Image (tube, helix red, strand yellow):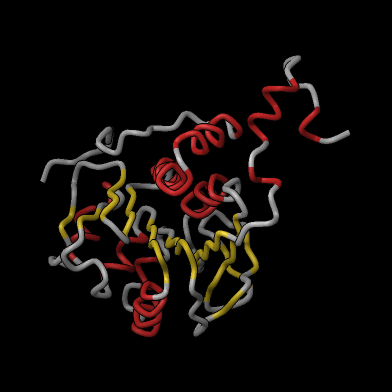
Amino acid sequence: MNRRDVLIGGSAALVSAVLSPSVFSNDKPKHQVLALVFDDYETLDLHGPIEMLGHMPNAQISLVGSQSIVRSYQGPKVVTDRQFPDVVPCDLFLVPGGIGTRKLVEDKALTAWLAKQCKVSKKVFSVCTGSALLAKTDVLNGVSATTNKMAYAWVTSLNSQVTWQPTARWVDDGKFLTSSGVSAGIDAALHYIKQTFGEAEARRIEQLTEYQWNSDSHNDPYAISV
């Protein structure tokens, strides 16, 4: 029996509508997502957005880091698909945050690699203090961006040429999509899916994952006064 025909709540039609469309289409080019990982990255910063992005049509997600095994701040480890100094053209480049960014902002080799990777990425998406790493390059100069509000003072001190937004769940400024702290990355990921594949696809994934999407970027319950 096809998994789409499995009855949930007595409605095979509903299951089919949620699980299909294109999760099952293999005749289209892969939508390439590359995600940076580093020791002490924040687990949900990475895996929250990846859960959503992984349901996109023909999504192919790869991890890149400085070593083959990388440990999150909460402890679980991931295996990278690529290692520095690989630069990979992609549709979306994801940069999570976490306590590990406090050290990495001083890593000149990393920031040099980031600048190169951003150039070959169609869209760059940071979560939480991932924007701190981008801010240490010049890629965000003149760009509207946001970050984790609890770390706002620190991140914004790294680059005064960024147009930092203290009230924003996420900010989409052309090539760069930056989100606030941790769970905001999930909301921003669904925004990216809506932007790329349409609202119906984003709502399908919202329902599939049983996640209540905050789809208003201006609805920022953790906004700060500056």
